[in-house]
Image 1 (cartoon, rainbow, N blue to C red):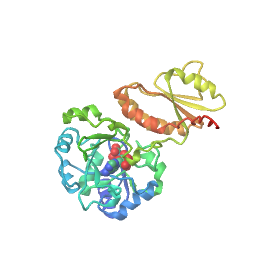
Image 2: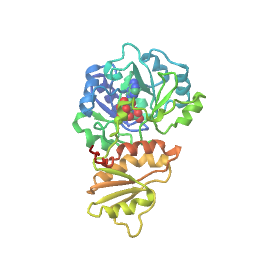
Image 3: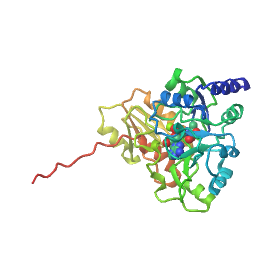
Image 4: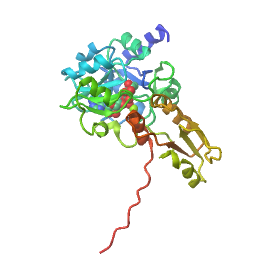
Length: 327
Ligand code: TXA
Ligand code: MG
């Protein structure tokens, strides 16, 4: 990445343009966070409803004060420990923050990304960059520049190519606006790590609160229907759907007699799995198969973030409604 490209990107942002850039989690679709017209372009490009708040990316924790009404002690503790890095903090917003950023709420999501290209862009631009993941609303987040180009094309003024994202799934979101901090979206930084840093217990059920609009059931979806199937049941499932070309994503290798149309082996460890997950699902989407079957990952704390994405990506089984009893 040249200084010239960064300079051009910063200028585009100042002019109200949209610049997609790499972060260590996923690629973001960036706009000047203090320019309402530019913010509107983000929503238009993504096809995203206006009540979904945006994360504002800042260069440094010292920029927090420009965006929030107050910085609680917990925010300093987490910033010192995890920034720059894959953690977003939801805090009480400053009065001047545009309603498009807060989604009409009284809070704001802030993050200091660690990726050197994101850091250079933030420093060259000199302000906050609002950036959701650079995908169409509800789709898989991009983890490579070409994913952004394929999906958003001419809607983006420039795509900065920083290679493949290291984390591969979106940042952990922690809400610090209430008495007890709560995880709104799990990620590479775990609830345990955040709890340890705060020396406090996180809010109960914090992992699955529907308060993040982005946490709706159907999010992070491939185009094909996706089923999560227990590792021991995959082959049975494939045989039961013999008329359908099924692409399997599993950590184990392909059984010799498998009837799957395609078998993609996924990494064994959760961080490696997360890093390659979205790119793998995009490949399977384009494979010509009609359905994706993903091996249900272990029910262990280190798999919480991956499970969260897969459960949201999965198509629910049609509900068998028992016939109502008459009389
Ligand atoms: O890793 C990431 O967080 C990436 C990179 C680009 O930084 N960004 C990202 O943005 O995933 P997005 O917009 O796709 O997801 C942000 C999530 C959304 O679900 C949004 O509703 C939630 O964060 N969010 C943002 N501000 C919020 C707020 N003030 N209160 C509650 N949720 C908020
Ligand atoms: Mg997103």
